[in-house]
Length: 489
Image 1 (cartoon, one colour):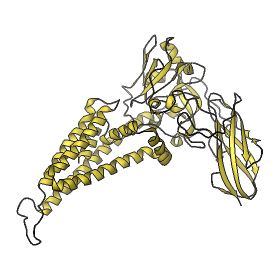
Image 2: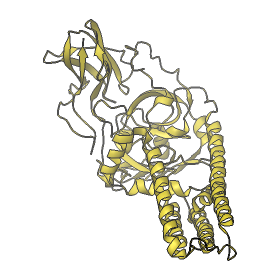
Image 3: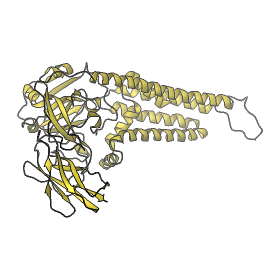
Image 4: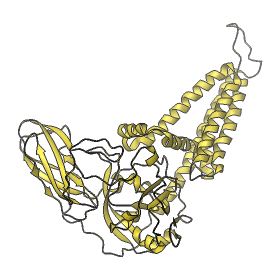
């Protein structure tokens, strides 16, 4: 009952739900190894797994409190109150929420505790003798079961209505995000020739683009009141509405983004056509002061990250993105605006649901830095085999070996493939569209019967070849040659 009432009130008052608030606190306070294991185990379903876990814990707690209440009626009420305090603290503690966000948890706990106490006090007493009937004393069993069933139905109804209200709210935000984008200032980008092999599309569809972030639920954006501020060590503090950003010159750039949690050969990487405004242009308008060392950005949900000022003004196309692959930026990927910075891992640069950019010293630390990740995080030169798939059985004929390689802001110069203990062979490369995106590669192999090991390595345009030394993703990105094993029959 308490959870259902809390969810309904949260949806009506447009604040974070108790479950999402507690889940977000769990994400924030969990040690690094727990988060890494969650990503390895559940992938992009890690947040769904957390929600299910919280609901399971609540169900077990409810069962335990019910059993405890049979001997001590006040135990259930006290337990529900304790959970209410936890939910209230978590909601009020969220960076994007006010103290009022605690109200749904408090009211839900009060109502839940009162109902629990009354039900327990009014339950039919246990019979001392098998044939003794004490039904006239207080409620009989039928009335008790009806009351308990009505309470359960009320809790389920409240929670369901809350879910419906919340879904309608999210649907309205998605409808806002479906509006067409303004015309481009530049002619756009021709990707002809980049698609060397169709195993991995050169451009990753929005629906297939990986999503790794700390948001258990998306920030509920009111785009009409949303503002992006540029503040801190600047000559002129700036503030832009969504309409004002759309009115600025719009550019498109192809940029590959990858998560620092990506294992060697992993899938937490994607390539998209981003549309928006250049960050350097806005910083020039604001007037960055000489003492500024860091571009420190904040999300609507309070998430933060930072990167050196020099990265924003060194000629790379760091953007405030408003569109993705020809569509308005999807809610999952940061609507109404996000940062896209070529050559940096997302945890230091790719703020979604962007609300503030602050020019500051190097001292402030983004969300992940105190949790054991490096302060600076340039993307490492890496490559991946996409064809053949791991464990595939192949025919003893000429077979393609293909994949992608990336070294954002440096570009890929060469990709080499080795089968078993043979020599490294240079692969064919797709068109060199931009140094900021991955590059497809392919080579043909005359497959012979037996078990085989295939590995790949890439060399960037600085002449540096990726290291063969294996390293885990923490603290600044995984390294090593992607290696697969196949059987030819």
